[in-house]
Length: 436
Picture 1 (tube, one colour):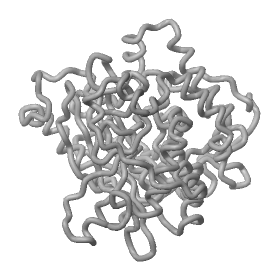
Picture 2 (cartoon, one colour):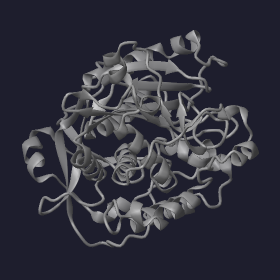
Picture 3 (cartoon, helix red, strand yellow):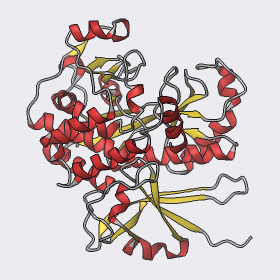
Picture 4 (cartoon, one colour):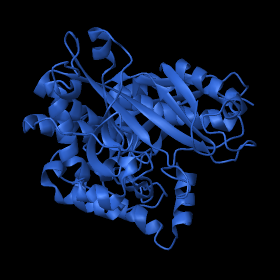
């Protein structure tokens, strides 16, 4: 069949979905300059393709402009058309960043960090996902046979990520049924969130080529495991890594300590942006190795923020590896928006000169919720509604974004929740499984 190659100009929107428009590849130069037409109310398309109340109505025009530095062109060499897309930015017709463009929102947060400290952020997103079509083998948590059954998929995914310009790190047969984890090397700045979007989409594209369906839904079955997105962060200065200080509290530099304190102070108000689905809160419960309490842990996988272990022994090696991990996130969130919220919270902590947070010394998985509350551990919001209320009520957090952002975002999420209103928990999980 005849074919005219196309390129898909893409964005990661408020629902965490990758949307956009395609154009003939021979128009690339034109589209790099003028973009593709976009409509403000598109921001209110929920993950279920309903449209939330919009302050924009039918009025207004924008441009989705592809960014050649975020280009992906992967030929799977299986006879199918190659996958070719570019992430891009939403701009006004005058060329200014639009206040609801998630990439632009992240750039603003990173600029704040750099202006405030001179530092650049380096980050990596670890993704857990599951195959929606069951495997033939069961009870394969971290198992060799579980890996072997999906080795063709894993090898194709690693190759696709590499062809896309990323650095694949690992492919793990995870603990849950038909669950896997894919990790890539850290990237600097906006590229880190771009890489997260690319990883998700290439995982789905690879799965289809082996007659599977990969889902990044926060949780498929409340009686089983959830799928998280763990965001690892470190800081780079002019001379190299500046996250670690041997003399600092648990190895944290002054920058890392204040940043971490800010993340924890504002965590309850940014949770609606990093864990933004109704069922995200079925995962964020005690003893799921996710994040249910507002605390900083040392290597603790029940902490919402943790200091990660390092394997290096020499000071330079430790400084390169030292990082903090935000665990209260999932793939219903746009990587750009989630990372922007975390960075803004960290910057707020730096501006407020917050002291280093205390590190949890106890193993939270051994304590019940009553014991934890008695010991002063603060429970994170238990529902999306509660998280949205915390977000909207916090003027400091709302002030990090466009003046209309909080109103629009809450409206968007309320419409998403309304779609599920008559469903029980199992049906809600199934609905999100299809979407993500």
